[in-house]
Amino acid sequence: MFNTTQSEILFKASKLKVPGGVHSPVRAFHGVGGIPIFIKTAFRSQIQDVDDNAYVDYCMSWGPLLLGHQDPEILEAIQMALNRGWSYGTAEPYSLAFAEWLTETLPWIEKIRFVSSGTEAVMSVIRLARAITGRNKIIKFEGCYHGHVDSMLVQAGSGLSDMGLSNSAGIPRSTIDDTLVVPLSDACAFMEMAENNHSEIAAVIIEPMPANHGLLIQEIAFLKKIKQFTQTNGSLLIFDEVITGFRVGLGGMTAQTGIIPDLVTYGKIIGGGFPVGAYGGRRDYMNWIAPEGPVYQAGTLSANPIAIAAGFSTLKKLKRDQPYPDLQSTTQSLALALERSAQTYGIPLRVQQAASLFWLVFGVIQTNDGWIRMPQQIPEEHRKIYAKVFHELLKRGIYLAPSPFEVCFLSTAHTLENQKTFIHAFTEVMSQLSIN
Image (cartoon, rainbow, N blue to C red; front, side):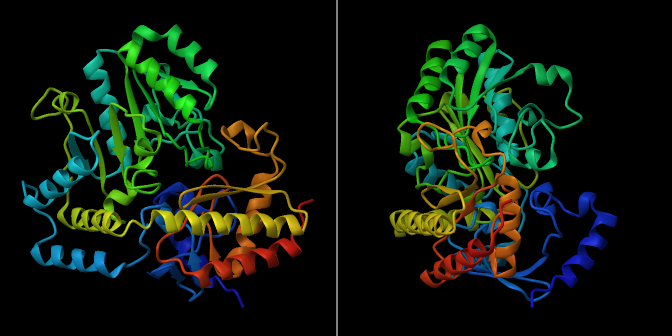
């Protein structure tokens, strides 16, 4: 019998010492209701909670674990790094080797700086873009999430949707005024905003495949329109590839689209499950960063040797093994099986999928091509149905992202048996689901 007694005890205790009982809001299950489960161990495609419930994990630490939990090759690299020492606070050869590998593998990255999170990477490139251009305004897109940088929390991603906030408290009015927000996938709205503010726009930042308010796959023509404007206007194009970098392919969406941004931010997979972020781009732009240039950015634990070892070994394994075609095929098959299962029982479901990412959307989709490309197109009933499905799957040993607006991830550790277990559990839930 499904039991969460120990998780409930721990959550009650945690709320006394930690805001909301969690160290990142989406972990609190606000998007689906109920008590968050507390995980004690993880291995390959499985996680186990403090009540000894086992789950097939389709959240995968929100995307970083493309190779699954405790991949033996990555574990060996981490252990070797630990034996050398776990923090130096000075120059060392390990991050240099990683930087050389990245600049050789990704031709649009001529120089790169390691930081400790995707948020820190975004904060840094925005400051850098403003310095280079001498302008203040940034264009972002509604529903894209770029971390909890002040200027990027204006009409941001799923975490704020779960909290019922359009932006965060504590952001100065002047910061909000310098952030111009445009609907996703609306080229006309973008061009109007861009032309009306052209002399003040330092940069345009976008997730080239937004995956923080649902999986909102954009048309390449839209991304090209943005690139064309930044080129002619002297603004910088920033791709936020914190999620998509090394997930949709080794070169991320930059390689997939063939659209080369001026600056790119990375996170998640680049750290192999450890807290690593990075930003990079053209040499002349990156030369603005201190100590070479006047744009200051620093971090005591930046390029931590343990995290670098995890990230570097992960990316080398991905380049060597090239698991992307198999992951794409497996994820696509899973998405189709889930859709067929829901259809059998009259449940409206669309599984939006790309590479090894997938997002379950419940409700009737009213778009011309059947794709959701902006937050406004998400069916109103989706949140309520997803919450029901999430908890019923949890009872059956399937762990999805605990938010109706977050995406799920496959890893190389997921087996055919895992997929069969998921489909069987999902079919059982669909057969019993009431959506009224």
